[in-house]
Amino acid sequence: MFRNYYRIALRHIARSPFHSLINIAGLATGVAFTLIIGAYCWAEWRVNRALNHADRQYILLNTFKNPNGGYPITSQGELAKALRENYPGLVANFYRLDGITSTVSYGDKHFREGLQVGDSTLLPMYGFQLLQGDPKTALNQPFSLVITASKAMKYFGRTDVVGQNLTIESFSGTRQDFRITGVLKDPSRNSVTGLVEAFVNHFFIPASNLAFFSRNMDWSNGSIGSYIELQPGVKPGALAGPIDHLLKQNTSANIYSNLKKVEVQSLHDFYMQGNGGAPQKMIYTLALVALFILLMAVINFINLSVSQSTVRLREIGVRKVLGSLRRQLIAQFLTESVMLSVGATGLGLILYWAFSPWVSGMLGKAIPSLIELPVAAWGVFLLF
Image: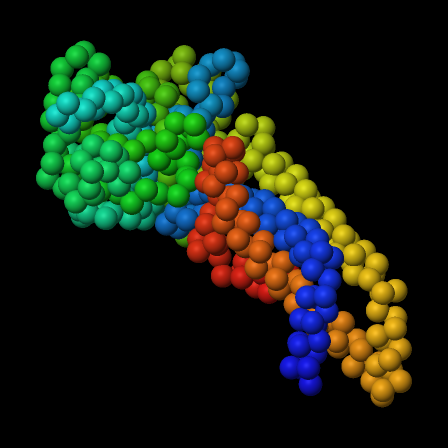
């Protein structure tokens, strides 16, 4: 019986090619752009969630009595380390970074690059994957260097470059060879390798090289990106007393008096609430737009289907005279609608594949490919 429904549905679609094409194209466009918007929202929501122990990863943020007293996304250089050393029952790990810009050279290639000078805890703490090298030791030695796979391709044309040297220039103009000890798989968007979203680092240097760049992570330096991983079950509020004690004990009276407090904020909230909560507001707004687009596509689909009902009244009458039951007629029309919907969804997936790179370029943010979408997304495709 279902084979008969299928054959009749194909025959009707073939007899009304223009109507069928409009119906499929309208629904496919709605499905495609709903999926693109949904994928963008999912990618935004996933920022910082792919990190190791993501629910326990936090950033320390200075807040000042004077709004112009310092950088609101950094804290005192020694604070994160001191919390780990003095309160191991509260803090499981720490990472600090200092972002700088310098000239990186290899042969006749010279580029101005963003460098991230930080603690050796970077790789094991966040679970970033190395394609080459040992994550436990890659950042242990002075003048060692971990680079991303994209930068390895840029300088060497390949990724198996552990043991190769890149020359980096200090602020005083001296040049030093750094030995590549690891090649990092380009990480998904996060607030560790990209504390400032517009400035993502691809070169990672141990903190033991701070002196080469005439930098430090002392208590007096309030411009250090500081991260901590809390012990399981510990709430960020438990650090208020320890943080105040360490600051009062180790910073100057001028620094301490200017600090209103140090906020311990989860990395997920740090991204979502950044820029006045713009990412979160954007997700909600785009989700409503996506639902509206899909609703309009569905209404258009229904209207076009209903408009054909008068054309098929004769067919319905003949089939009822020949003995067709009400449920059989319903099954026939549902079969046709499902076939049109499946065709539209398939075309929508093709449109997604074709237009998502263009949307990515327009937004400046990568839209996940179909194979990168979660398994639940394929359930949404079936729902469509």
